[in-house]
Amino acid sequence: MGLITSLHLLGRESALHIYAYHQLEQIIQMHLHASKTVLRYPLHFHAIDPDRNEVIMENKTVSVSSIPMKHNFPTCGFLIREHQGKPNIRKDFLEGKSLDVSDYGRIKRGEDYIDSAGKVYPNADITLPPAPPRSYAYCTDTAYDEGIIPIIENIDLLYHEATFMEDRKADAEAKFHSTAMQAASIARKAHAGQLIIGHFSARYKEMDKMLDEAREIFANTVLAEDGLSIDIHN
Image (cartoon, rainbow, N blue to C red; front, top):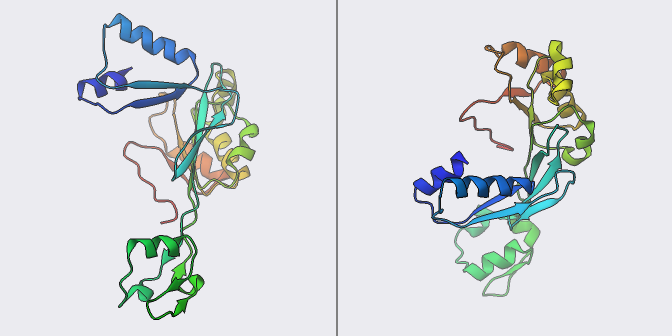
């Protein structure tokens, strides 16, 4: 609710789309009604089934899917996958040529280029393959669950909760959370490119040991922190 009302106070006018289990809509509407808040912007709620893996949003660039989480109340993770991009036109080919917008479009669609003199330039000779599509999965709150592995297999970047260290594995199981080593195990079994661990219990003041435990299982692990930025396929 804090984000919703803050956006209202900041003067947001464009629509906000929320994807969550259906009970959350009732909670949001109850808060708005109790506070007599009339939002400045449209609020669109999209109910999702927390027990299903399904595409919940898609545009020309990415698709977003829900991932069922193993928790003691309805919880979803999210998988974001880029669509395959179009080929890039070689810079050396463009030198000395005056292509219009339609030429660019045809070449990127895979067509050959024919200049004003009738010379044919095969598409394969004038383009470079697009960058590999990137993928990111966000998995929290959840107990250890190998059932998500087929969904996130070969993910480029995985965020997985690591609430406890391994010596509190029993606490993790009882509270439907994961340990750092369990998060790392999911990353390894899913052949992830990189792992971010977060959602740490407040009992931990120093995170180095948490990170060390995860790296015993999956070396390419980093700690989540405010403002963290990671380039995928940079």
